[in-house]
Image: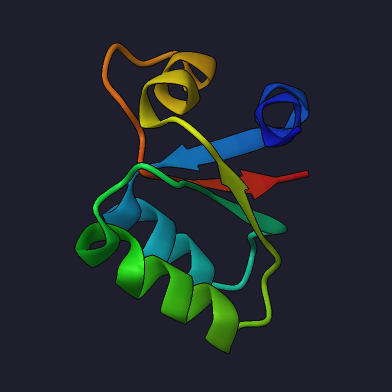
Length: 82
C-alpha cells in the first residue's frame, strides 16, 4: 500500500502547491493522492504528474495520509522522493 511508500521515502513533500512545484522540477518519483480529497483540489497536481509521466498512486484517506506524513491535518497529495 502507498502509506508504506510514504514511510519508506527518503523525502516527502506534502500539500498540493508544494507538490506541483516539485513535479515541475522533475525530482519526484511518485505522486500519492487521497481518494477522498476534493477533485478540484487535486485536479492540477494529477494533471502535472501525468504531463511529467510521474506514476500516481491513490490512498483512501486524507486523514491517514496526513498522519503518516507526521502532520495533524489531512493531506490531499504527497510527492515521494526515493
